[in-house]
Length: 76
Image 1 (tube, rainbow, N blue to C red):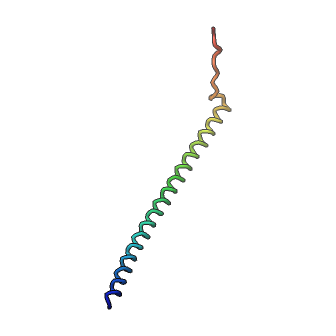
Image 2 (image 1 turned 180 degrees about the vertical axis):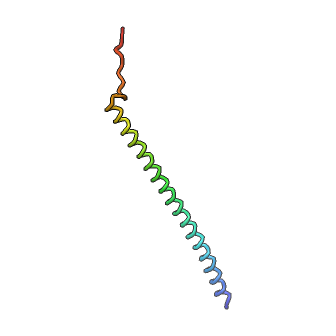
Image 3 (image 1 turned 45 degrees about the horizontal axis):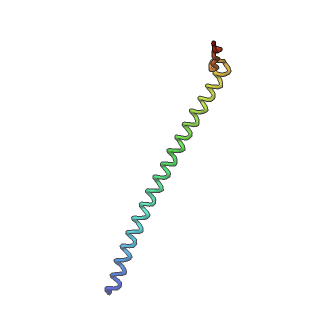
C-alpha cells in the first residue's frame, strides 16, 4: 500500500467514526424528544381529565343549588 492509499484509508476511518458518532447522537436526541412529547401528552390528558371532572362537579353542584352563593342585601 502506498502512503496515499494509507492516508485515504485513515481519513475514511476517521470520517466513518465521526459519522457513526453523529448518527448515534442524533438517535439519542430523537429518542429524548419523543419521550418528552409522550410525557407532555400524558400530562395534557391528565389535566384535561381533571378539568372535565371539575366542570362536571361544578355543574352538578349548580343544579343542586349548593354552589350558588347569595349575598345579603347591603344595609346602610
